[in-house]
Image (tube, rainbow, N blue to C red; front, side, top):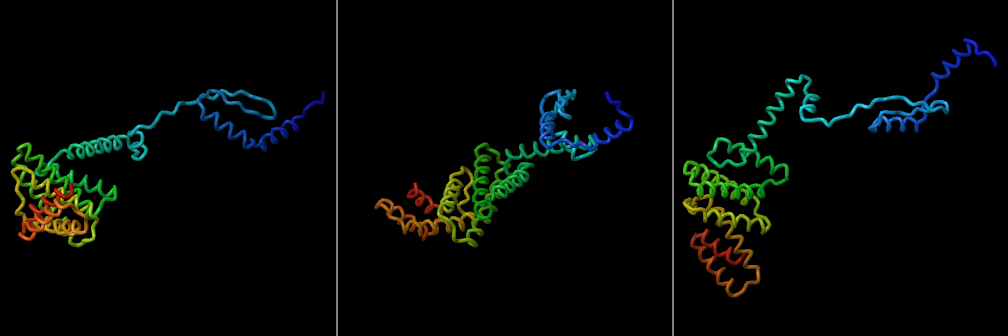
Length: 254
């Protein structure tokens, strides 16, 4: 057997440094490392060598782990988490408030944010807000919260004013939106103990809605009974009794 000199050993070791793993070997090694196994098979020069490689189980990151990654100091991460939970809790509690409550402004901010996220802007947002404010007024009236009623009426009045102005600036609206406004005004008129029929903003909005509803009905094929109801609505409209006219129109649209 030929002797292996020291020089040959050194040359062989230097050749080993130049050896690079094949691409498929690298892919296999990566998959085995990520798999829940404790052994990795390495193939070098057609010889299989078994290496022990303990794999540490990876646990899912919680909110504190995420915040700790964003905020280096752990205490700052915990502080931010507490503030975050408090904000979420405040918003959740504010959703059940009504006008006159301390956190009601937070509820309005949450509604505006939700409308923006869903792309509900302009007149559509005003219509949705009017429905919410009328529901608030109905709730405080039903529960006998007399201290909240003035604030609830003020909120409804302000929203009706904005909606009427928006409708004036954008007269070309789909009929479904006009019907939604008409139904909201009808609901408002039915809230006990809160007569807003003489409110100037309610009068303006009711006039515009009735006018458009009459114009739409005149283009529609009606039965004799419906024509009679429409005639009564037109008569009430000419007298300036817009909410009464609205009630008649809604009878036709049932």
